[in-house]
Length: 316
Ligand SMILES: O=C(O)CCC(=O)C(=O)O
Ligand SMILES: [Fe+2]
Image 1 (cartoon, protein in one colour):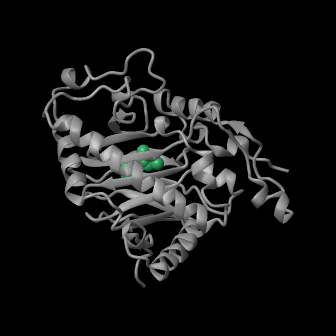
Image 2: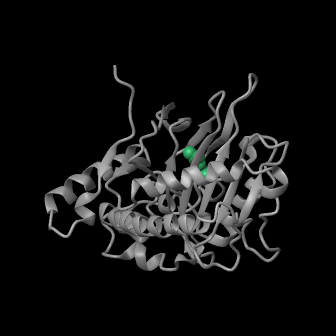
């Protein structure tokens, strides 16, 4: 039997000038099924030029090869709300990666590698293009959920809190291969692109399914905010990275996020209006985000002690 694969969706009907209602309908059917079953899908013809994505991966591999004292100079200013700039996982962490974290272009908190000189414009261009694609995907998810037109766009209108992370995973050793421990993303939705190494896996029905790298695709996964709003109709899927041997792996994750002051709770559309009890208590997003950042900056020694969305689950 063929290995299960994450569904792939052609988004060209959403980017083209021509009306293609059939194409849109077909894409939305695949996305609705993928979001209910996997919480993950891949998109092609997504509006971000493939050579730009490749260029960003190339630049990040150059940057992560800088001598470590150079990399360590790229640190967040003390008042930054998140650890932007370069970070490496603490020695005791089960996660074996290093990363460069950035806010939207123009943010005063951003700190970038100065070399190669094209790094800043390329990273900013990738950020801007992924921001646009994420808005299109959010609009599609909004429709797939049957929410009023533009509901998610209006709920999540402030783009200043999005962030992007360039990651490098070290090659696996004989004794361990964890890259990122299994987790769900805490935000609204994530767009991801990866080099050809492989290692990203999604949990479905108790099995780990590999997300096979493909140059033209962006991987999309929904985060906890969407899962809470729709009371578990669409999933925030569990995923992890297993490091391959002998080579580093490079990827970029773009987090379409939410402003910290937003209150997040299951919407009446998925609870009261259809006679279903809420599965989560409401929370201020900033509180959850702080708990999540602590997972990263002060990882607990037992991965199961990481804070996730079950923290707010109503268990009766
Ligand atoms: O690097 C990847 O493929 C996954 C990254 C990820 O899951 C994350 O940063 O939340
Ligand atoms: Fe993730």
